[in-house]
Length: 253
Image (cartoon, rainbow, N blue to C red; front, side):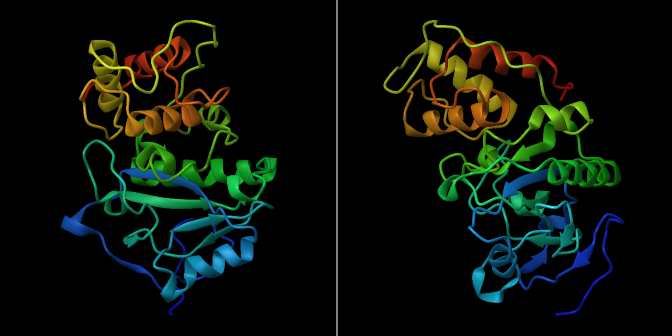
């Protein structure tokens, strides 16, 4: 595989990945998608992301000590999002730049992200979003675009710290109170209203007025990103008010 020039001056090493293709329909990336590697070993994760037989790849990996590796040129379509959707777009790979953050994830103890790693993620994200004109509300988690399949980068990822540095869309989460809430099995207009709000933000779900498996997964994904103090999939007042506050701060579409 040919070594290519890095897109960012922050890149410490280029490790070319085998799996990538052309962005479809001539699209330019307008989503920055953050993941965790989800494997016990960072080196094993990097090897998998570069291997031809893995069926996956990404643009960047940020390792624990803050070093940044580039695997795929930004102009190419990396294979990191999988089956996913955002704002009714199902080819998220063609719309996004994928950054894998080295962390073993929920299946391997899910440790905290080291400060030097988060500092590097912030700098890389600031560089990419500035060069590409990616809007704050388009800095997303893998779990946002694939809530039924993915949990990453998870509730320990410090989205608030990124937002304080100018990366991503964020409001201070509404405090959790013991109030009535919507949950699995509920149905009717209140559920339909919440589904509509989640869909307006970008989440992919059918507006059918029923709080089923997909609704539960989407609410969990929303909580992991925007209200991480309790990730249970139950749409309490804290969850719904935080969502409404985020929607109020969206730019006009």
